Length: 106
Image 1: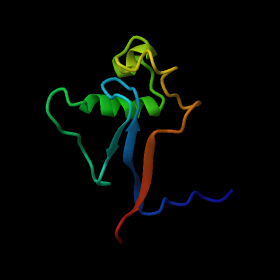
Image 2: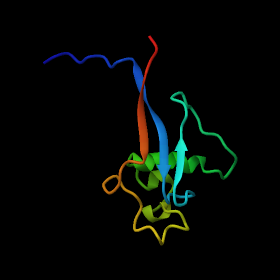
Image 3: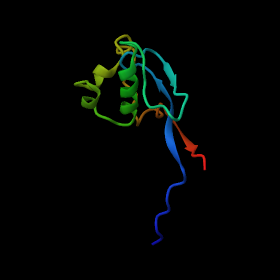
Image 4: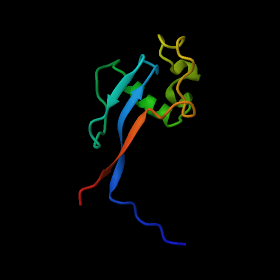
């Protein structure tokens, strides 16, 4: 068995999030995350910061309980809950996250 090679210098980062009918996000919301060095999300109260992060957790497969909800139905946007057949899931739709690789400067 060969020894494991160290990973190349660099790291993965979340490049964008596209959300549909999730919590406070209506039909479609795109959030390009412009920097691989992003360390926080800021904005006024009620602007959807927590919901954006919970959308990422939902796409990563976290349970409803981890997303401040008792049931998955509570994660649907109130205006779209009746019009959406179901919340997007990893098995029925593409992952709404774009992940990129950044090479570290040598």
